[in-house]
Length: 224
Image (tube, rainbow, N blue to C red; front, side, top):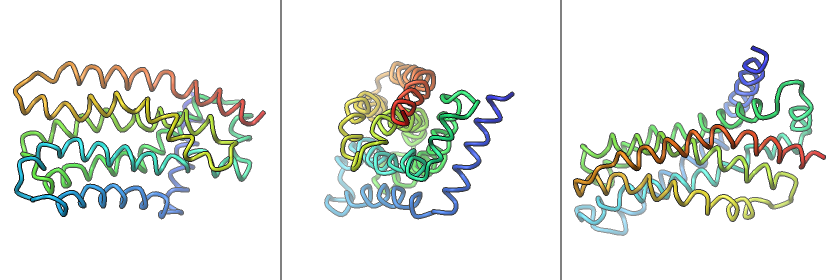
């Protein structure tokens, strides 16, 4: 119960802070929408090629928008000293870190997920494939937040660590991007997609288990 209370307290606090500073939440979301909407302007909207690449376009835009939002995960807490209080809290640090990651996904990954069906329609993706795209993003976007948290925790004490975070986490994002974007393409060719679903689910379970532990350890090193 003590661990759950710490998790919910951090989650509630970060959600309230996000509501106060809405620009940090809206900027990645607007970036996501703009990146996706630029592609129909540069290609024939009726082209089958555009609809074929729609899952990859949405996935790449979601990945870039997540990278854009990662900086606010621990940076502001580090600058105002509240991160040190979080690490020194009697609650387990990984549990508190998990609360911050959950808040990050709720304010960045979830809006991207909810907008993805509309953007898929704009790109001309056939309606029967939209639920599959939604499922792949539902499994993949939490992985992006979890893995990104490790990179941010490793660089939180560095000035201008944003580029370094990108270099650290982008190779780890690549398998998620490949399997997530490939699901719809495989389904369009009549191939089974159960393997991709299970791989994304396995990566999500592994990230949920290990990412808070790794990020918590990195934060302790940064504070010391």
